[in-house]
Length: 150
Image 1 (cartoon, helix red, strand yellow):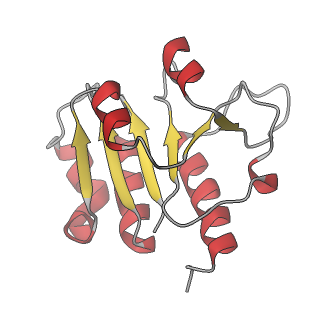
Image 2 (cartoon, helix red, strand yellow):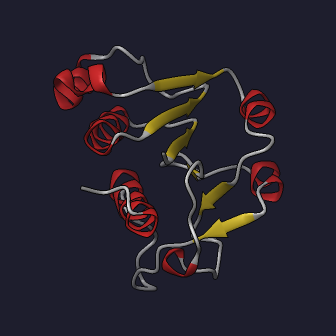
């Protein structure tokens, strides 16, 4: 299994789309609070529809709590501030793919805590991908590598 972790997400539509993606690919979703919206908001429900029933979601009160639980696992931060390409990394079962929020990514302390950092290369004149798109790209490659996709 691959885990997707969202660090303090702040756009409900992206989180809902990620719930749907995680449901479709049997990925566990971990949400690190605080979030920038109400989790049962109508916008969210309209996008994830009934997919939330098939998605295991774990909520963490803080990044510190998340790290205590993940102590022994491999956490990979996806960031525009890395030179390492996601497709050159060797993913393994149990990896957690961590994504910052849409407005600010992750703070410097979180960035410094995570050893493995990867980016998804895009045209240099663009700032970043949509969070939901980045999660889909990264999860697809991780699943391909560990042969879990159908």
